[in-house]
Image 1 (cartoon, rainbow, N blue to C red):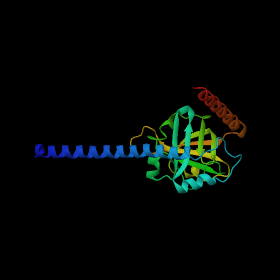
Image 2 (cartoon, one colour):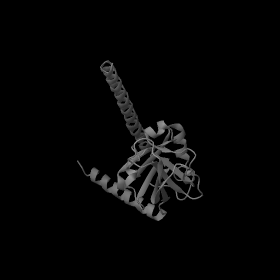
Image 3 (cartoon, helix red, strand yellow):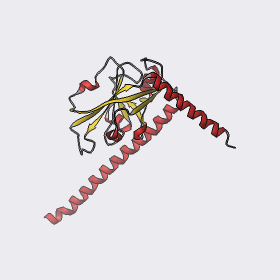
Image 4 (spheres, rainbow, N blue to C red):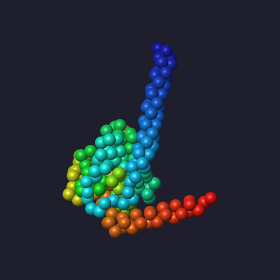
Length: 222
C-alpha cells in the first residue's frame, strides 16, 4: 500500500511546490511592475527639489494618494534602499511597495508619519540602519529629509509608537527578527526626526549644484 501511495504523494508535493513558486513569481512581478509604474508617475509630477518650510497640509500628496494610491518614494542612501511608498498597509499595498498607514500624517504634515513594509522585501535593508542615517522621502509636495534618532525592538502590542504625535516625526516599522521564518514575534521600529531646515537647504543646494554640472557636461557633448 505504501508503494502505491508514494507516486500520488510525490505528484501532490510537486503540484504544491509549483503553486507556491507561481504565487511567489506573480507577487514579485506585481511588485516590480508597481514600483516601475509608480516611479514613472512620481517623476511626471514635477516634484520640487525642496519642501515648504515648517509643517503644512500635504495637499498634492493626499490628492495623488486618493487618485492613484501613490504617496512618494523612500530612500536611505547609505543602505542603498529606494522604494515607492503607497497608501495603505493591506497585503496588496505591502506587496507593491512600502505602505503608508492611512490614519497617520503625510510627509510634511505635523504628526507621526508611519511607514511599514515586510522585512524580507522593501525593508530588508533596515537591518543595517544606524542612528544618524539620513532618510529622504520624496512626495508630490516636495522632498523631506529625516535623521534616524533611535531604533528599538518591541512586542506587537506597542501600538503607542505608531500613534499620533504633536511633533513632526517619521516612524518605520517592520517585523523582527529579520531572519525569522514565518510570522515574526516582534517589531523593529525606527524613529526619525526632521533634519534641521538649514542642513536640508544645504543638501538641496549641493544637489542642484551637481545637477547643473551634469547638465553642463551633457550640453558640451557633440
